[in-house]
Length: 275
Ligand SMILES: C[S@@+](CC[C@H](N)C(=O)[O-])C[C@H]1O[C@@H](n2cnc3c(N)ncnc32)[C@H](O)[C@@H]1O
Image 1 (cartoon, rainbow, N blue to C red):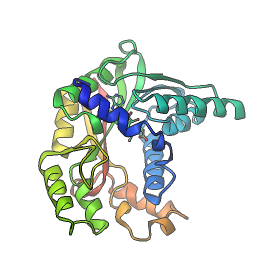
Image 2 (tube, protein in one colour):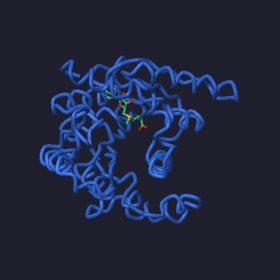
Image 3 (cartoon, rainbow, N blue to C red):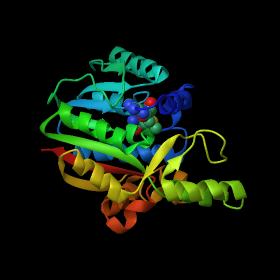
Image 4 (spheres, helix red, strand yellow):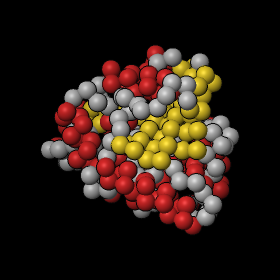
């Protein structure tokens, strides 16, 4: 990260360790997790590949990949996340024949991994928080450097209209300050951690064309965009649908790459190959 303010905002945002519950505490979080794991199953190279989980947070995805037989290594700047990931790894290993995955503190913009040493890189967090385009280029360049030729990138962003849709679905647009914040967010892509009714998130909301441009500028080829949650996060009865999610997941697979529907998804993933 280029400036101290960005780094401080990210560290402060996650210091409580609450990120740990995000992918299971709510129907939306469960949807994100189920869809992400479905994308892993279909778009990662087969295990036992070496996967770098860059910005891996508390290790929910890394532990799933370890269970699947991948050699995972997690990196995150937040001490609480690295501690949580180490604890999950230790518990997994204690409960069965799963080798531990390594977790370390670090920054996506300066990776401690050798050139061309990984089969896949997950960048599912850093691009949400690197507001400066040069920083995002550095992070994507680092992922490119560490991947072997033919290695796979899964790079996720928060989409430009996610907050507008969220605030609308929660009936919050009548608050004049919320409207000012949402309008600024849609116009610039930036969001602040403090001083805003919709705040609590220091980050950047991508337009899809800029995501493609950024991944291509880093040298990646075969770029494809897929929706993570798609339109399903807006369903009023999402909790019921998730009690038997097979039909919902099948419908999401069918529409996940449809360009006219991508922007409604709060997260979109760029799938790409290192040339
Ligand atoms: C919303 S969490 C996502 C965690 C996990 N990847 C997932 O998909 O559930 C975003 C993560 O990105 C991490 N992050 C933010 N800036 C980063 C950077 N410059 N380098 C590496 N990780 C970063 C945060 O610490 C946080 O753990």
